[in-house]
Every structure is written in C-alpha cells, then in structure tokens.
Image (tube, rainbow, N blue to C red):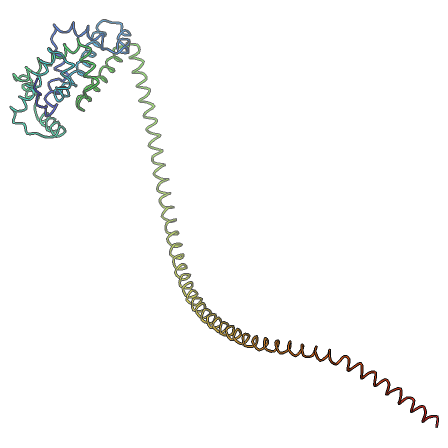
Length: 363
C-alpha cells in the first residue's frame, strides 16, 4: 500500500474526537465496548465501581470509563496516520482500510481549507485562537459539515474495532504518543471521573458532615486569616525595624569602609616609600658588594701571583739549601778527623805548658 501523506496537525482530529463526539458513539456498539472494556479496564477502576451501591451510579462511572478508553484510543490516531507504514503491520486489513480512509479524509480537509504548512505548535495555537473567536452556534455548525460527519463516523467505527482487538490496542499504546492537547483532555476527564466517583460515594449524612466540616473550616479560616493579618502586620513592622537597622549598619559600614580605605591608601603610600628606600639601599649594597668582590678577586689574583713567584724563589732557595747542606755534610766528614787531631795536639800542648808552668813555679 502506498504511503499516505503525513497529517500536518492533530487539531482537526482532536476536535473530532472531543468528549461530545465520544458521547455520541452509536448505541449498537455499546455492547461491544463494554465487552472489550473488561479486557482493557484497570482493576482499580473495576474495584472502585463495585464500591458503588446503586446501579445508576455504576452506569454513570461506566460511561465515564468508556469515555476515558475512547479518548485513550482516539488520542493515538494522529500518530498512526503520521506513521501509517509502521502501524500497518499491526492493524489488519479491516482496520488498516478504515485508517487509510480516515487519514485521506483528514488530508483532504486540510487541502480543502487552503492549509499552509506550519509547525504543529503554531497550527494548534491558530486552531485554539479560531475556536475561541467562534460562537456556540458556529462551533455546532462546524461539527455538522459533511466532512466532519464522515470523520465522526470513521472514528466511531475505529474505536469499536480497536476495543475488540487487544494487539492493535497494545501496539498503539506502546508505539504512539498523544498530542499535549489530548493528554490534557484525558487528564481532565480522569479528574472529572474521580470527582464524580467521590460525589456518588458520598451519602446524605456524609454530605451534611462534610458541609459542617466546611463551615467549621471556614470559621477556622477566618480566625487563621485574622492571625495571619496580625502576623503580617507584625512582620511588616519587624521588616521596617530591620530595614532601619540595616540602613544604620550600612551607613556605619560605609563610614568604616571609607576610613579603612584612607588607612589603606596611606599604608600603601608608606609601603611604596619604604619599598623605594629599601630598593635604593639594596642597589647601593649590591654595588658595594660587587666592588668588594672585585677587589677581593684582584687581591686573590695578586696573592696567587706573588705566592707563585715566592714559591719559585722558595724552591730555588730550598735547592741551594740542600746543596749547601750536602756540602756541609761533606765538610763535617772531612772536619771530624782534623778536629780529633786538633784536640789531640791541643791536649798535648796543654800538658806541655802545664809542665812548664809547674817547673817555673818550682824555681
């Protein structure tokens, strides 16, 4: 089957599938819907319905449940039309043929109204704007056109068939997403169903008790409102006092800030002066240190030079000393026997002179 052109917007489909349209589902399909509903209805809804005593209350809730299920199905029709090739494998021949007719009708309606392609959000906004401008009679007339009647009949048939086919229903639930407007409508209908259910559950005694509770609540609300007004007045006074204290604190803080800024600037000026002074002193010390270092280096070089010269002289003198010492040793070796001979001669001479002197004394 050829791919159908995509539906440009779900606005027309949403209007066709509104609550008023769902409530007009033909009576001949109501039996099938209720049989199908037993397969799709959540257990919580069935349990809630059993809580109702009267048959009228149960029928009212059943109608709302049928409307919710119909909305859940019709909310997926736009996605099915936009992705027809994907859903065709789940639909089956009969439902696929009806969906093809529905999608063709919707596209024909768009072309017939000289529709210009826009984004879905813009189309929904334009549709809502036009609906708000229409009167009630104009809205009823819009649903009475031949095209809208065809769409309504096709939607009724599709709702009945999808109710009877769990596979199609599950595929639409899993692989399609309702538009935001349809989600809002479903949520609103669920809230309406919950509200009606609670009202149907309420007995006359419970209603009186509830009204008494509301009256007591209203009285407590007045008392609480009075207390709230007093607290708000007290809060306003506290806020005013706090604001005045904050202003005073701000003024004191600003004065302290100005004083600290002055001290900061004075300290920074003093710091800069001392920094310049110490920097100049450091420069002078560096110059002096450099000068002393140069002088010390020069003295070291001169000392090394002098020491080298003196070392050479010392080595020369040492060599001469060793030579003279060697000569002295040689002379001492030669002088030792001569000295011995000298001592011997001198001893003999001394003995001779001693004898001569003693002889002279005797004379």
